Image 1 (tube, one colour):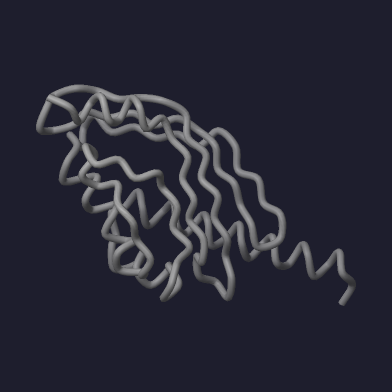
Image 2 (cartoon, helix red, strand yellow):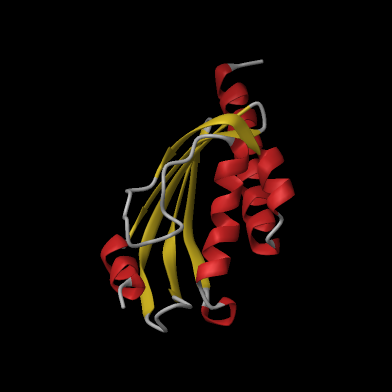
Length: 143
């Protein structure tokens, strides 16, 4: 197998895992997400003490729980996320798009662009680095 073929095969496997991640996330399948994350995950999401779902995480269960926590603290019918770009290079993927929602406790909305870097190894997500409009989200969480 040539290097180009190996790279393409790796990229295809990464893309398939990312698509599975998005489908599980959309379905709210925490059990499926837990199985998709590696036992230990390099998780990065800037801490923000006023946003209840943003906190350090490292295990598969903690990472999957973030999605449930977002749902608990936001109004489901106002939640929107779109992926405009998906770039895959070997084991790495970058998704870029926009997200918006309303915080349940305050009734305030947030919106903005995001970028998500994922790394997939052995069919499981080992890195999850999310960059988002944390200022807008914090403002929406503040009474």
